[in-house]
Image 1 (tube, helix red, strand yellow):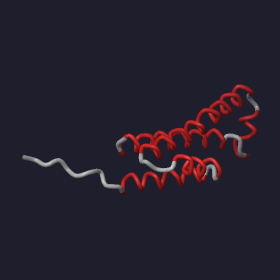
Image 2: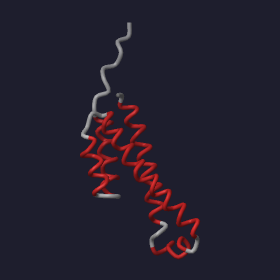
Image 3: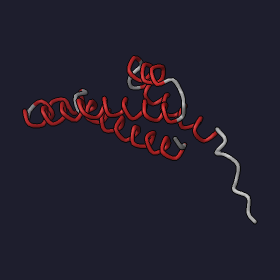
Image 4: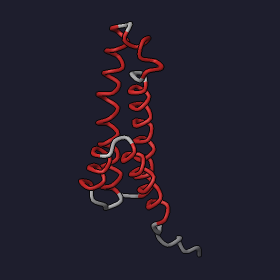
Length: 109
């Protein structure tokens, strides 16, 4: 697979991570009271977390696979060290995607 599709998977994974962290942040003390006052809000945020985090991990694994890297290692890093591990994995894979050679330019005749 190309690095372009890996970069797209990394960007989508970053969006999913941001959405998941945003939903989790709603349960922290500054917003906790307003969050737990509505059952609908609790359910919606719970669903957002339940969808966003696995989506982040799947997309991260897809990007690692497309870059021919260890999927298990990168996803394990993201899961076990959440949320810092996920962000670190995104940053490192993004850096690796930009550093690896993209192939030789086409010869012009």
